[in-house]
Structure formats: structure tokens, C-alpha cells
Length: 246
Ligand code: NAD
Ligand code: ZN
Image 1 (cartoon, protein in one colour):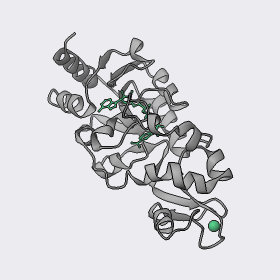
Image 2 (cartoon, rainbow, N blue to C red):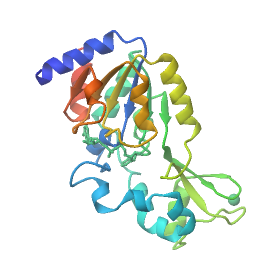
Image 3 (cartoon, helix red, strand yellow):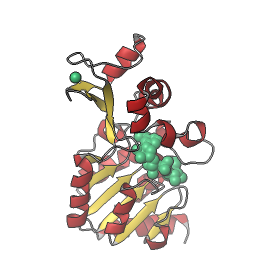
């Protein structure tokens, strides 16, 4: 099936949806200049090993190393801007077609684009908190302290470490994840998956809970075989093209 036929087919599926939700991953943000983990060559994965560096073990056992090696990648997302992919999803929601977005991204870009219903299942880079007394700080508090030369950011109340409110390898999943699972189980008949390799657990189990899938991803995913349509195109273009048929 050629590209245009696939776009039309995706639009038809979306039109018959009773509960359309979108699951996004790092691939929707590469067009905003944020490298993903698993694209060949450019993926963050090839430069540092996130499984080794972005873990709770490194954060708690060697926090200075976490703040030196893994953290600057998270801080570098701060000035990124939403692209056509994020914007198309805002449009789909405001047309009353899309019920919500479940994102693995921590880059705040759905939020910045103006999407209203977003479950950030790996946290976000707007907030941080103290691991001792759980008081919340803005994410930028960490950056401010690091810029002052402090190696491990400290809580002003109890002097324990402040950490970003993101899910590292080894962390438990936040409330947003469990809310998203409940929502998907109860209300979702069609899941639009955009820019995710679907290799990170437990989010990778979500497509298995839904009867009908549309996948937009540059590389193959383990769920391609059961998708109604698989579109191998950049997310920004594919989503904008689908919108023209809705
Ligand atoms: P992933 O890196 O495993 O997979 C990204 C997929 O997107 C790849 O299969 C790639 O082919 C595809 N892709 C890349 N650019 C694309 C484009 N323009 N259009 C369509 N597809 C494109 O990402 P994942 O599945 O989200 O898992 C990675 C984990 O890393 C997540 O847990 C996420 O929290 C974290 N992460 C987040 C960010 C971010 O917030 N932007 C960036 C890197 C990693
Ligand atoms: Zn504290």
C-alpha cells in the first residue's frame, strides 16, 4: 500500500474510533532537536549508555556522577519547541477526536504545545523534589545549584538531595501511569502509537491492551504485525497529512 493510501486508511480508522488515544515516545520529539534513544547513529543510546547512567543506582550511590553525566541531557531539553507532530495532536484533541495522550517523553513538549489531557508516564522536566522530605522544587532549582558549582543539589529545608521528577531505570511508575492504564482499559478502542520503539517496559505492554492500533514510526516495532496500518514516515508529516482527511 502506498503512503497516501495508508494515510487515508489511518484517517478512516480514526473516524470510526469511539475512544482514540495516542501513545508517544522519543521519536515524536526528534524533529524538535531532541535525540531519541534507539535511532541508529543519532540515538542518545550510542553516545552514553542510559541503562547504565540514568538509573536509581547511579543517582543514589553516586549522585555526583549522575549530575555530571546523565543529568545534562535532561537539562538540554529545556529550550526545545513543539513541532508539527505535537501541534497535530493538539488539533486532534481540540476537534474532539483525540481523548488523551500517554507520553513516555519527559521533555514537556505536549504540555508546551497546549495538549490538555496528557499522562506523563515517565515524569517531566518541570519539577524536582527532595528525596528526604519530598518538598517540591521547580526543575530549574537543580540547574541553578549545579551552575553555582554544587555537585549534588540540596534541599533548603533538610539538606538531602534534590532529584528530577522523572522515572529513571529502577524507579517505580508514577500515578499517571496507573491512571493511563485504567483509561486505556476502559475507554480506548484505537491507539495511535507515534515515535516509540515499544521496547521500554511497562509502557510497551499498553498496545497489547487495545484491539486496534495505528503505528507511525521510522523503524519496525514489535507490534507492527498486529497494527491495522503502519506508517514509516516522520511523525510531523504523517500526523499533519492524516489531519487533512479529518
Ligand atoms: P526510543 O528511542 O526507544 O524509540 C524512538 C523511535 O522513534 C525509534 O524507533 C525511531 O525509529 C522512531 N523515530 C525517531 N524519529 C522519528 C520521527 N521523526 N518520526 C517517527 N518516528 C521516529 O524511544 P521510546 O520508545 O520513547 O523509549 C525511550 C525512553 O527514553 C522513554 O522511556 C523516554 O522516557 C526516554 N527518552 C525521552 C526523550 C524525550 O523526552 N524526548 C528522549 C530520549 C529518551
Ligand atoms: Zn528536604
